[in-house]
Image (cartoon, rainbow, N blue to C red; front, side, top):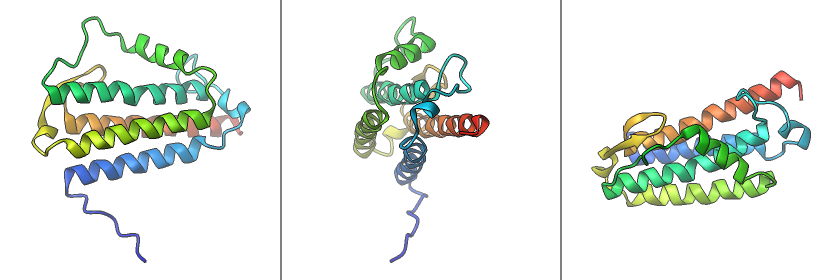
Length: 166
């Protein structure tokens, strides 16, 4: 039995592969963290590793809304949207959840995002909208933002763990 890499020349296949790869690395990094490790400071001032996990959990559902609006041809940004306020609210909303609950939340949001990707045509991947941090972006690029965001924060968590020696 071989673990052949999928044909990454297909855009949707490439996105799915990258998203699954990023998610696997994130889950492997956070699934066995101790309470002491979760309470370590992260690179985000005022956030612990736990808070960063809360943030990651809230990010994908927000991007799901953007994707749905792009596909519907609707305006993707709400007037006066403040990404910092949104992120802080998502962290606060998840306080008290244990990591296993957040992993399940991540799994559910990923199932929805991949289903949305499956339904999108190749032409729809070129539809454009506005992302609060990335600016004007097409649907394909939104998926790239999702997996890169996850990878970035996974690396942030690993760096915080190394820096603490825990």
